[in-house]
Length: 200
Image (cartoon, rainbow, N blue to C red; front, side):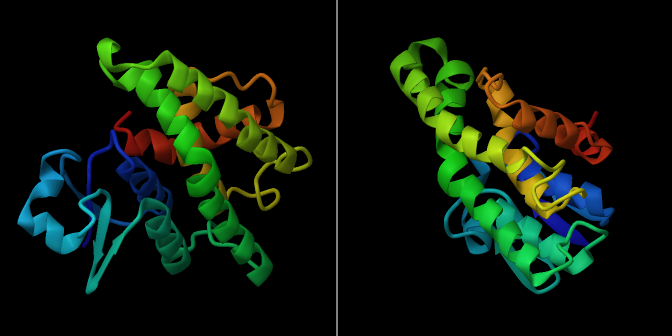
């Protein structure tokens, strides 16, 4: 059986969501992202010391969005793109989510919600909110004439980007300037598979 190491309240949620979408039987091995990743045993799975990690037969794979691309390609169920061009776009959006979108979202989330009040820096949070406006605009423009990133159907591209974008609402970031992206995010995060991954 596939094993996914991590806990839902972390980047592991992205891959738990994918596993639920695909209906793949799996075991969620609960590994705390602070203490659990520091053990020698976990270091053999991921020398970077981060979750999630996927263990599928002889394959050990880390990086949440790479795990999702692999799972979608292996099991498909309609989530893998139908053309080589759309495969390229799925990779593009997945890399974009990590390089352009995640950092300002995470910074705002940490300094507005996660850190104890005495460790929060409002200046860093506000700066992150300003920097978030650019990728938000890019995403909104891409969705102006379509329901999902690659066309009319939900795919791995949407799951990967939405699993990062979901932090925007948690970080109290305003999406009013991006109605297409906001509506798309609601469509993506309303999927039953995500609710199952979250234990709802």
